[in-house]
Image (cartoon, rainbow, N blue to C red; front, side, top):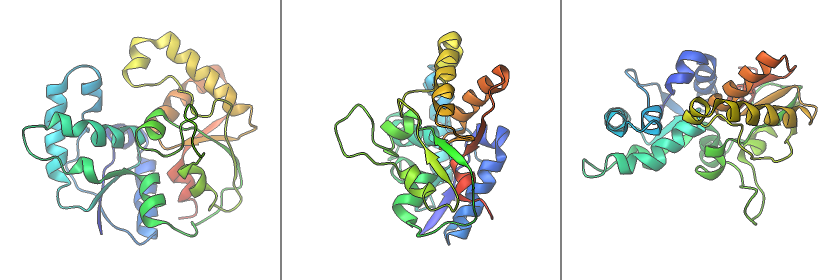
Length: 245
């Protein structure tokens, strides 16, 4: 299988180490992965703000760029979910959207497709898992707490393969952190309060780090923690999974 690595614009600009960690981990796991040049934003910010015609242009570009690949993998649950859920509607009538059928978040891809028995390195720290809204309810990275169904977490399954780690989850395990893209811009006071409450629940677990599949959620909480002097660190889950490479 041939995998195209999609690095969302905010990861590329603010957290490039997450993109590097994703590439290194996939290579270590024996995946034939390639990073296509000339990538752009997937269009999610424009669509969320109501500018869908602008988002459609980005969708057309990304769909053509990743056409040669069997899978498209991204270290971002929200961007992967946007492509998967919204691209068929944005490109309806133009051509059949193929990227939406083969895009996966990196956690989803490693858990469901690669299925490793072990992962490299050690991470001797206590971490609290942040289950982002898109990851839970659109990609199925974990079971939603509001439904009566067997509980599962693909993130925790993979973290369990890392030597030395202690994994925790906060009270209200999949409650929103308040980022929500444009929501944090349009309702900043509510957004900050939600993020503050979420950080406190994560810290109540005794965790040294908060981790998750979305740099956007982690960025939001990290900003609040920094401004308020909360002693907690943040790390993308793929950086833990690739520790030691």
